[in-house]
Image 1 (cartoon, rainbow, N blue to C red):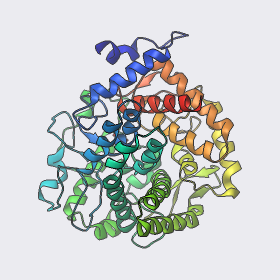
Image 2: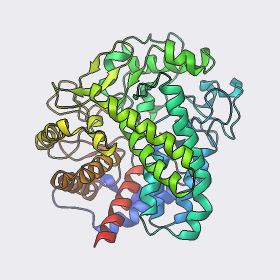
Image 3: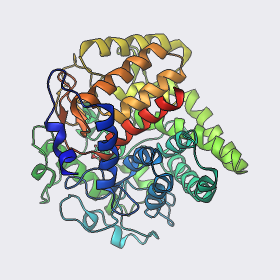
Length: 452
Ligand code: GLC
């Protein structure tokens, strides 16, 4: 077990690659080691709780060798869902199943003990990209056992429907078709350079606090102090407005139409609508399809002619955030790419892929904001490459999809299961022994074996 935990440091050079057998064993062992009894932590120390979108991806990994455990990941996540109040339906970005002192900001910082919301476990007050229904749709294609599925599916789908309704109600109250995020951490791509401009409007907190992340990972890989001052301000803002979604929608100093979230939400809503149809939840299916149609009509507003890809927009100023990040390519996964932009965005993606030995960097390597080892400003996240790869294949771009898959495979073989990877060398960065990376490997391998 310990051998596996440190092995990514062992092989970094030349042709000294991990075999498929080694990778398979290590990936399963990673999930087993990070299991805390019904939920999986992303990695020990740095992230000691259950994270929202990590849980969805991690379930796919469990599905390859323990189906009930895969469904349990969602049951555990839904224990943190807000059951009452104006934000009813919110699935928070972290569920604090048990105490841990190695993380800031922990449960005492978010104000959840005083918010009056009914839920089973302490949580944060923000969310993360809602990819869960897409993960469940994938799970159902993985030789899912009919009895286990029947026992688990309905309550999870109902919880997800309430969450998607929360997104549209609280984060697009004017029915524009484009939801907004109210905190960079909601994007999951915490300090992407796309957020630099909108974050300038957020004051830096003046209160004292102690970061814990720098005790686990070198500061050169982590977000800056200035960034933390602003995100702590936003956390406190939520609490001070009493978590009132109306006030957040009007007064939050950070409101961004995030192309990553919009794409992931749309892809998942389409999958959720199909799941609802299968379960006889017709009203929910109709609602979701109507919202997706609204988003499809609005998505053109996020096209950047300058960059040749979709981008995010500052909802407060109306400015497009024209920084080339990989989030734009999630538009294929969200089935949102308009025919008029498809070929151009594909050309942009292929140009990116030729600029670095490994794909797909989170920021285009030729852009001044690119930093190969710093969080979300350059490194590769394998689960996002998998979503983009899936979107490309669905859109009929098989060649680009295969190219991305090959790059993903070489990162696994060369470096094992890190949190993220440097696009210039393929070396792993951030946390080691990382759950969603291991799960992404297990899922990819399983899909390949079904095809063979
Ligand atoms: C970091 C990432 C976020 C992820 C979390 C746990 O905060 O930015 O996307 O969910 O770690 O892996």
